[in-house]
Length: 52
Image (cartoon, rainbow, N blue to C red; front, side, top):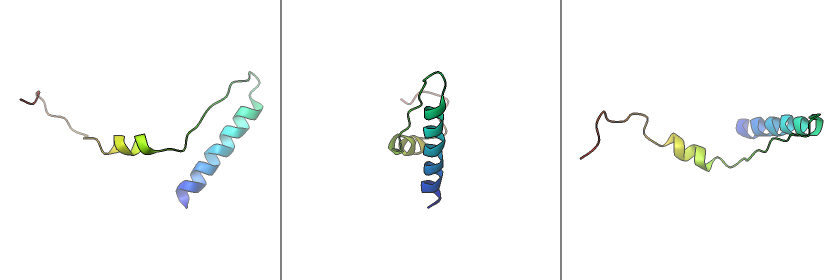
């Protein structure tokens, strides 16, 4: 439930910003974390030389 609560708070903040921005700028958000999860699965260390 913690992630859902965090996402709800971010959406509330985002909606407030978009509704109250005097210059009409809007921030867009997505709740699809698929790309983020794939990135976290990528290696964190790389070899010093090119593989043969």
